[in-house]
Image: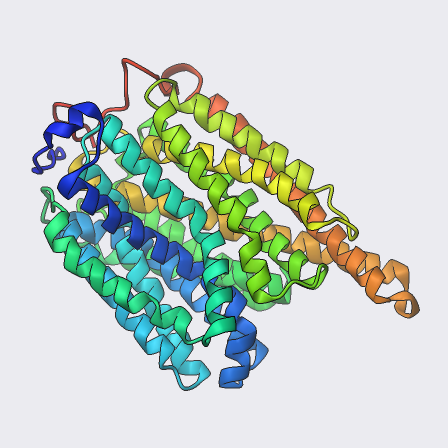
Length: 505
């Protein structure tokens, strides 16, 4: 069944490329939601020591505060995107935000480690429902062209700066009020979003059908096991039984999922969505491209606190210039996509990202804050440049009825790429640091030696991220820039639901 065009009326300002009236409110709702969801993945990081003291948690319990969110969010992403396609995106968007808001309130009221871990898992489920539907609502509410490009730029900007803002907000709330407010702060925003969503967002047409229960079960269980194994590897090593069995079980379930999806007529993820070379290429590039940014963010945060001795608030504020650079990059690129082929912008962003990471990997224990800030600005400008055209490529040619699925696959690829890449690079960092400490000898393990070993491990991991970013550049050129997969510029855009006719799913 072919996708349907959105039913929303396009205002007269669309011809001038201005977002006004209802569309402006719709964009604010979508962007605030995306910022809240992305921010929640990082805002907890700087609050972990305070949470541990407040609830008297063990180190293992503290790890699960972060892991519970990652597991449920990654595991339910495809499910969340598909049920939005089948039962209405605005409806599921409100439900997802509502679940996230309630879980946030309960998280702030948590009395022990178990209750906090459970509420973090519920937050992940709510985010997995709301995030893909938020992106698909951009497609159903904004016509293809300048308006959608601007909306995608704003959406991508929120996705990119959420991590940096999360550190800032987390540091402020922990130092000035209490760790509980990193959860409470979501409640008023969640209620406002639910109120405005029903008035500003157009539902669009959707296709009712049977939900693929077997597919939902196998892909969710497979993703949960895979993310669990990757997360556990950073703590217990790749050779531990729990890691190996989790990875093997997750991979096996995902294979079963693909086989089932190829045979069932009511597939949760119809495999035809990968037949379009542009879309499939965007998913592959997105999988690799996010790794370097995630790794840099993680290791720079550790460097600031472990080596330079920054506190929570100081660490958060140090990312403020990065947030500004990402906003500039996404806004500039949202205008350039009207003039240049998408693959050129994606390739340029990936190359600049790789150069910035390579520069950052030259850090040592004597580097100053400015020494690591400047390469980060280069790296994040490249990442922000690639984000907008990459999202546009990932949803190109998708009918309205499957916009949520395409959005969920794009989200899943980026999340899984970041999780797998960080697990691998974290292992590299630990191995390099341990080797340096062993070489120095037990008696020579002074604070200076420890700082040098830690920084060497961080630098080697970041260099690995630079190599992965170069892989993204090469894949962009080979898949999206050559032959039939080439993404054109002016005069020939990717087909979409608002292109003036029916689109192919």
